[in-house]
Structures are given as C-alpha cells and as structure tokens.
Image (cartoon, rainbow, N blue to C red; front, side):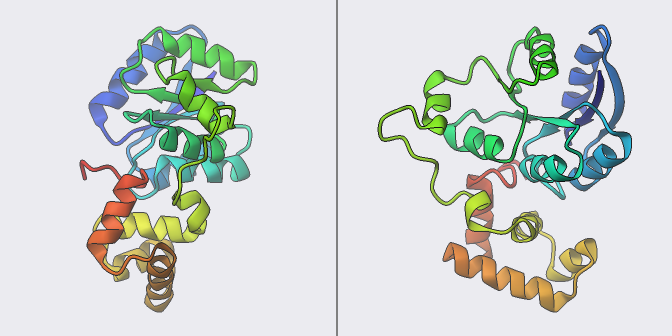
Length: 218
C-alpha cells in the first residue's frame, strides 16, 4: 500500500513513518510538513492512503481532504488529530475522509485502519466515543451538526484565505501565494467578515482556531 505522510511536526511524522514501515506491504512514497505541498504530492504521487494532520500550515487537513476527493479520488485521506470532539469529526466526515485517528491512539490501530480502508470502509479511532459518531449520523435524539462550521458557512476559497490570514499572512502575501490580486483578497476578506459577523482580525483568528482551521499552538 502506497502511503503519503503530511504533518508539520517532524518528530510526529518520523514516529508514524517508523510504525508504518514496520508493516508488511506499506511503502512511504512522500512526506511533507506543508499543506499546499501535501495536495500537490497527492496529485503527483497517487498514494493509496494519505495521512494528513488536521492543522497544517498553508492548507489545513480538512481542505486537503475535500480537494483530494475531487482531484485525486483514488487516494483515501486519513486525518491525524489531537481533537476527538463531535465538531471536528463531523467536519472531517463531511470533507470526505476515509479515516480519523487521534495522535494518542495505540500503535496497533494502524494495521487495523489500513485493512479497513483497503475494504473500502471508513475508520474512526477506537477512542472516539460512540455518542460522537451517533451525534454526527443523527441517531442520538436531538443531535445536530455543529453550528457555524467553516465547511457550511464559507466557500473553499474563503476558507483558504481565512486560514492564511489567521496564520499571520498579510493581504499581499495571501495574494501572491494564491495567485490573486490584492483587491480580490480584500474582497474575500470582507465577505468572510460579513458571513461570520466578525469585525476584527483577532476575531477571525479565534474563529479559525475554534473551528480547527489552524492550531492554537501557532
């Protein structure tokens, strides 16, 4: 099984790589610590499975999963995260992921995960409680999807710009990175603020952290 690793924490990436390389039939075809590069590598190397950190610089794991499902549908994306809340899991499932694994999961979950994905199943880390899954699927009475998730409120381009802004990139930097004009970026930023009813940069950053677009560690 051809595997790609994308995590901006070098030690975490090395640890997962070591575990995967001990599994029979697994080949690591590429690895990166940047979200934009991860998507490019998925398109270029055609891995069967891509392990992607949920909070990546440049492009977060949820956006990578959503785009990969359209641009490289043969690649199954597995989200790596420290967060197992209903909101994070629901966003990931809506983005089309094939797996969601907590970073504190036991090492023996990896072969189980890969076998499940090989059968075409969706794998969720065993420590993610049943009520989280039931809540997402709507089986729990009164359960509703998390409100205000970026996947429902903003367009893909707006989510991308919001992440870069929250990471501290200037309007000019964002324009250069995305190949847009400064005016276009300013228009998107204004629309983002209008849709979220947020009027300052600090509010945008807090929203991006709360919804998982960026990590609170950044």
